Image (tube, rainbow, N blue to C red; front, side, top):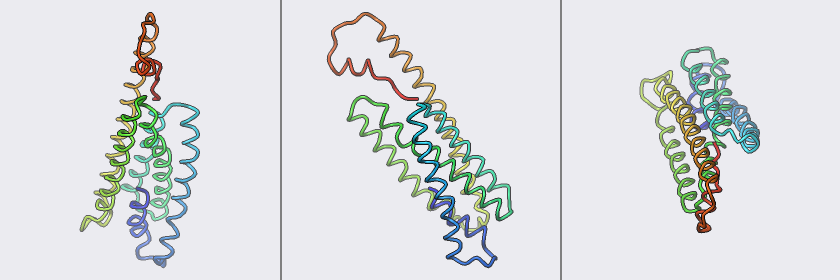
Length: 198
């Protein structure tokens, strides 16, 4: 997503300056490096902290800040700084959002389907991202920024909602495991002992 976003924004920011295509392409590297570093850091923190809903919603919130800056500001370097903020938000949200489904299902078939569904949605988002910044007559890319801003807000609220549901599911599992032990199959025992990550 960051690659689809950067090209039209960088072209818009540096149009009419002495920057050529090579310079514009080189300016796309620092935000991508920020994304890489934040992904490494947040992948580590998600594994240690087990607060995935908080991380996804805060990453989406950071992206909302960046898209709001892109919509309101016209200074070149302020818009370029907004790309760093968006890249950091993507770095916070991406590793957790992709891996969350891989750890929350005890049944391997359901887990595989969930991971495939997340990958499918990501690929669908990439297809959409390649078209939302090419609207004819939209020189400030208002449609693309608005679309991404609304998507980030929806992601933040959805992550909080899912986190609350998963926390409630864990409480139910705790209550169910506190009842008297009745002989169950191996699969039922694993599902009873399983705890979701939120």
